[in-house]
Structures are given as structure tokens and as C-alpha cells.
Image 1 (tube, rainbow, N blue to C red):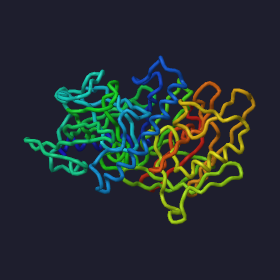
Image 2 (image 1 turned 45 degrees about the vertical axis):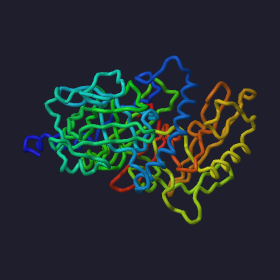
Image 3 (image 1 turned 135 degrees about the vertical axis):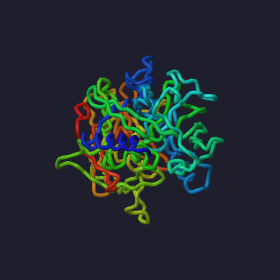
Image 4 (image 1 turned 60 degrees about the vertical axis):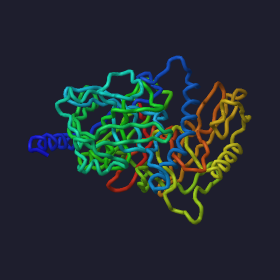
Length: 428
């Protein structure tokens, strides 16, 4: 790195550290602020659509695990149009706004770039690297190029990448470095130079034409979190507002500022596997019923992914059956059925009762019994129909974003631990 560029980079790192990190808006795809927002749909339509997207995630994650083991062609785990949160970032000098999918299960940051010779029809303008004075292609022998799962070399020795996603969507382009500018609290911004990202010149598949890229928050070396590294003390956190709070915005914090605090903070070991963040779920408690979430042979082993991009909790069939039975034993309302409810394991018809009450459910993570109120574990999916916010999969278990609403969740990658604290995320 040249002396001037190094000085700028160190100055940016120092600014982040001095500010104890920085916070950025996380825009839910169904928020009125989102380019994916469809005002013609009802809140119930949006909840059911989110549940259907959740059902697609486990098989994609399982396929990514097989790919990492070498058993299948390499694929990134995210299903491009299944993301739940978006982030605004400005690329280059002068700044150019891009709205990207946020995904904690993938690493590469990318944006569609001019010329886009074979791209999906993106509605927002494309980023033009020739207009930016801070854009630099990376060489084939650069360290970031070696971190790509699939890479190649162009005739001018520029690093080329090819990412294929679980539904065969694909992005192809040049690996480059660029200045990323984030809007932080209030009207402030923070510019960070030399962020490695993919400048995609080909993209196809199920990407939404309202978004123009992806921000990977996984644990791999090319993710935004890993690239910020020591400047954020290897920590990030977020606070997700309930889906019903359309006037408030969720936040993500990069760095050690505003970490969970107080006597009610719960901490549990965090394990990283193929860029996913895994926790150990020992069991689930409902009333006087305790349900084991591990087999005797796997006791104490990481067995559930924490993922902001999945709406429902995804549990193994045996655990789901026991949980549904325990809930039904405590809830004195009729069972609801219907074709629109196929994404849920159990639903209830509350039309005949105004005094119905659903139980608290405790997810017993290793060293962290996280007690969740009904607002985190049940969702209203139609008029007078309330469903357990859980789906079943034999492939993988996932702790989703409904369960994480109004929790401050911090990932400490240096200490390999994750912390929870109950807060009002509308005031975060």
C-alpha cells in the first residue's frame, strides 16, 4: 500500500476506533423505506411471504455445508431474493448510493457495475468504476483473491470471481477495492477506504431489480465484518425492531460502542463453521415441559445457526413435534387450518376468545437461558389466526429474526461469544 493510501486507511481506522464504532440503519424489506416494499399487500400477506422465504433457507444452508466439504460444486448459501434486511452504502469518490442485501451467512460484498454485459434488469443506476478516483482492481496474486472460493485471472492479471448461489443465481466480475461511506447516527457519515468488494459485470437469477448488490456479514475474510477487523474490535451487534413498528428502523453497530450491558445480559459460546455463526441449543422449555434439542452423542455441540435473514425459527422435526404438543397443552383455543398456513407447524383460531394467552418459551442456549415472550415466538398471520413462529427441517436448525426482535445481539468474534439483552429496539 502506498504511503498516502496507508495514511488514509489508518486515519479511517483511528476514526472508527475513536468513535467506539458506528451504527447504520438496517432496512427491513417490508418497511416503507425499502425499495422492495409493496403497498398493495397487507401486513398478513407480508408475514406469510416471509414465512415462505424462511422455508427455503435450510436447504440452501445445508447445500453450502456440502459445498464446503467438497461434496458438491461451490455455492454461496444465501437465496438472493430471500433476504429480510437491506443496507444503504455509498461507493467511490464521488459517492454513489447502492442498496444491498444484508446477509450474515455469506462473505463477499458486491455491487453491479458498468458495463453490465449480462445482468438482471436493475432499476437503480449502475455503479461506474471509471467515474471513481478511488476504485482499484485487485491483482490475481493478491491475498484477497486467494480468499475467493472460485477465482480466475484476466488477460491483464486482474482477479476475477464467480459466485453461484443456491438457486443457481450467479454473479461474475472483478475483485476490487473501493472507499465505502456509511450514513451513521444523525447526519454524520464515515468513509472507509480500501474495502475489497466484487464489481459484478454479469449477474443473473432471482435477484430483485430494486437492489444492486449484497453486503456479506459472515465470518470469512472477505466479509465487511472481517475487513473492518481490529478497527471495530472484531465486534458487531444489531437491534431488530418488531415488524409491526413500521415507523422505527433497526440498527446494526460495528464496533464496541453500545454493547449489551446490565444484569440481564446472557452470554453463550459462538462457533464459526463455513462462515455461519453457530450456537449450542441444549433444549427448549415451555411451562413445565423441557424438550431436549440435542442427541446424547452431540450434547454440548454447536447445533443451531443464528441468522437475521430467516424470519422463523427452524428446528428439527422431533423438536418441533414436542414443542407444538407442549404449546397445545397450554393454549385453550381451537387449532386453525388452511392452505395459507402450510409454512407453519401449528396455528390457532383466536376469533372466539379475546382473553387468550400464549406461553413464554425459553431457548436454553449453553450458559444462556433466553426467555422469550409470545411476541417473539408467535405471529398473527391472518385475521384472528396466530401461529407458532417455527418451521421444521431435517437439514439444519436456525434461530431466526422474529425471535431476535427487541433483543440487542452482539457478536464478539475475538472472544468467540454472543450476547443477548432484552431492550426496546425502537429506542436503540
